Length: 412
Image (tube, rainbow, N blue to C red; front, side, top):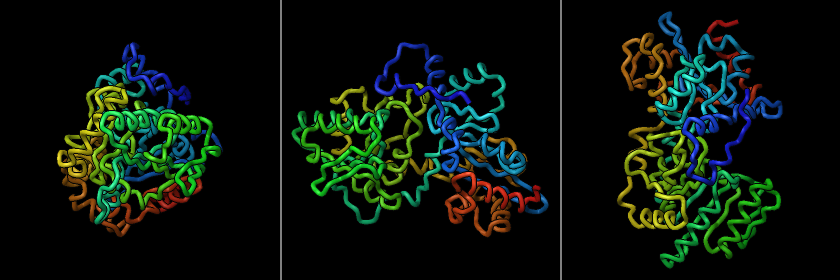
């Protein structure tokens, strides 16, 4: 796998004069798949099954799984393709480089980019491109508005402190907001690293963080001066506790310009909190495809602190204008995720009895088969009622789950 060139030139500069085809090539020059080829990462490989293989009435129906380590898994267990369609996940807005996947997560529907890619790589012409990524498999019922929680602070952010996230831009926007509107914004920021030390007075010690994360946080501290006046930092917030923070915020901000399909955005909308992103976020990879649908938040019109401050002001002072959770449920969520994949694969139209587009959870044959095989309804499986047969991590756990399926389906 060749993916190793991190496209840093697009992380802080929203305007490139390169031809779009060259930009696509630059983006595709990196995929996180390559990291998981290293022995020390083997126990981090995910194996996620949104739709499980079924056997009922003498009929076998394939499932599908996604992973950032498809090639490693299939090379270890080649007969897995008899009962699964593998979906490759680059964990970035690049197209995956997997040689064994039947489908690729591409984050967004961008026909021009897909046509260019398949013309350049004719051996990939039969790969099915899905405008999805793992962020779209967010469980919208676990990640939902917290009960009886009022919106008591202005901004919630969840992101690493690495340069790709552009934390200093958020700090500049906060400072500009105070200058323009005379108000100090109240921000809660979780960086997802327990190496950050937070003292009782809310000051932070960054000395144990990776060097580039240290530099980013030091820039934030320098921009804001008395940073505790504005930001309360959290090293890490447990997943089960996140809805309280999302719900308590008036908006959520992502300042990155290029990355994958950010889970933070999905989680915020699930909790009915409007999102703010720059209009240039992933613009080269997504083309005209939106970051979010309908009135779920706002795009910052230019990559400047003033534009960010004005957009924050617009959102937090007009909460009645936004319906993020309603829009998320219309277009996203696990049911829509699974239906999008099933409807994209001709095999399912040809093999599911009484198949109806967009109605997999209503299909009686599938539900009977699911109950017979796994003692679950289709809905309960999709929403993780038996996580042990849906999501495992690391090759040892993957091996055990594969052996379970091989036994169930008579594969030696």
